[in-house]
Length: 285
Image (cartoon, rainbow, N blue to C red; front, side, top):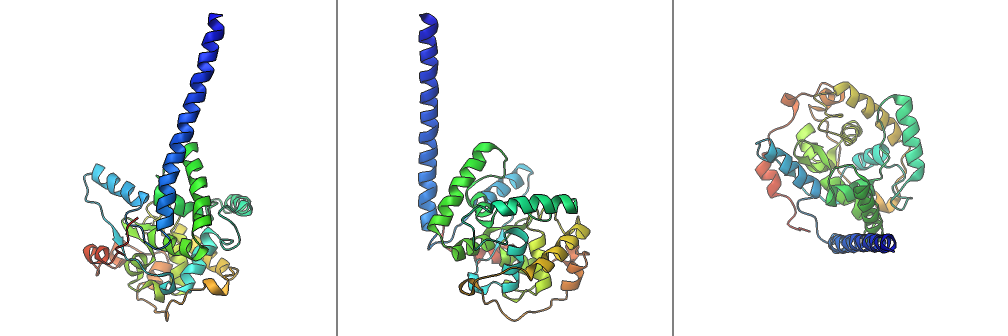
């Protein structure tokens, strides 16, 4: 009998633990849900990734850096939209948050190229992680990511998801969003990026600080840029989702960057961090 009672108590403890875990997940995602609803009309302030990078900088004894300029989707070069879709999520407008076909294609292409040339996570999945989660890799985080991905797809339109993504994604050490990246690397606005410049920026998205850091691995970035630029011709964007951008402008930095010889001295420093951060949208979620 004692062993039976102990077994019963053990099962009851497991049920309670699972119940508490489920309750915790529900409470956590209820707060996330509210924040996602607010994203329909308000722009986010500091994202989870930005906070993580700031903490990492402080741990190294450095002052956190954040360069970001919020711009509406209409002011992003259509070349950049096409390049980002080509490199990260070519079926963005047809899937509902998860692209199982892309997962298979990415695995095959990466094996053929011998390196990561295409990611398997969709833009919505990447946005979920960027806004609300850490970069840690563990099953619970992937579960959170999946739930948030579904919520983003249900509550925000494709246009808004893409606008958020293009404004918060990391494009270098302390560089966030397309406008800051375009100014930092090429000295132009995101509206005036050429196809080559757009492909370059899309090429470094997977890991701009290390694996695809253009100053550390210029040849790797150049290979991926060429692949993305070829693939851009195949991307189909529905008319209602096409951005306007502006007339292309060829910066004196363009050819240095594309040839894979970009160095810190080539990166534009003429717009100070404080000025850029001051232009960030006031909407905070």
